[in-house]
Length: 300
Length: 274
Image (cartoon, rainbow over all chains, first blue to last red; front, top):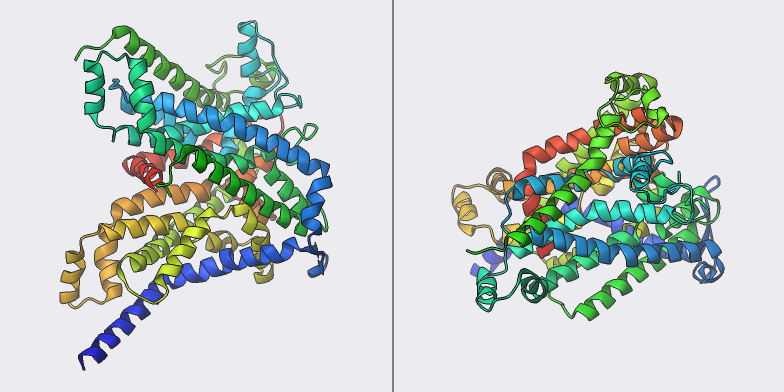
């Protein structure tokens, strides 16, 4: 009898468990799990959407096409360049800001609120504000003029357009990571610093020998988040170039290219799906490499 | 404690310079939104507008009749999406933390795996699925696919694992079922976790650019980021209008932030501990 009762009780709890999970299971099923399978299917087909959908099996064609698609090479080159420049700079800036802010300064709260502003603002708004400042006779060129520095056609010159986006995004993202660092800094025991002070360590020495090593796991996390975010650059490039990736493909990123192939040209949706998979694999490899280098596995 | 004054001066210099660098673009945008078109095109660089005017804010609503609609679309999609996320993620997090049912472990692993899939992979099939459902250019097409979030299911699970069991036991003795306990007792006590979730989910919906770009093609269904982008296309050198529109778009998030400021830091801290 006792067994039976507990069986009923268990069954009821299981039922309740599934009920609680239902919305999540249904939505994840339809809009995440099924799409992943669908994406695999698409990436092996040529897709035509004119009046109903037509699929034509093409094997690995879509994946092989990448090797001789010049725009894909340009997009990959731009994206990788963007990642390797932006991730280290934004991480260092975040760390320096957090360490400065954590040194027992007055007005910490004020600085924190100010630094938060870019995190709160949408990428669309930030991009428009920067485009206005990057204008040929806009604020930034005006300031450069005052300082007797060369001015640039930030948006129209293929040599600087991507750099303009890099500057904007380092500025916009660093404060977010600063907050993560700040939280971690508060967990470093004060006794570490006191011991170092007794040994006569300078502020810089304390930063390099206590702060940086202690923040290693967080740095690993910040870099991984940075990698994932930067590889997916889209909004800024899209708004900057009005969707084209121009001037002269200089702001074309992998995700922008995926968008163009999927939704702006005919018959290339399957190829776009294949590109999306390749991007996912690149991000995965970058993440794994980062973890291997930092030898820190306890994070995820 | 003895501190080196030079070191502190340098630190303050860093903090102040960076604060200026951060706030400068916003002040410039705000100032431009109060300038006349004449002043904008003349290329003069004054921080205080020569002829201060509020006209731009009036003009954007009359010149672009859909502007108000975009604002409402954004508010509705973000609010409804956030509400559903709060309920669904919490329910799932609670079940994963507190209830035993077959397959729980695999479901949890699937949710963690979903965290790793870049959104671009599912975007194209999602578009086709929404097309089949007839949900392109609809509110539900924007809201439902984003109504759950793996990160926050995970966060709610962690929260409920550390939640004191006694509370629920007392509720069970009082004869409340699992649903009653959850909605009447547990959820109200989860406010800090819900607040952190609110601000992040709301911001994600509010600022989202790529998904609406794919799903919404009918101008009257646009959200603000899309509207802003098309507005820029139409009024290409009317930076006074574009900046005024940008400011209108930024205000609601600042208000939300003012209310949920405390939880924001906690939420980020949690993300860092994941």
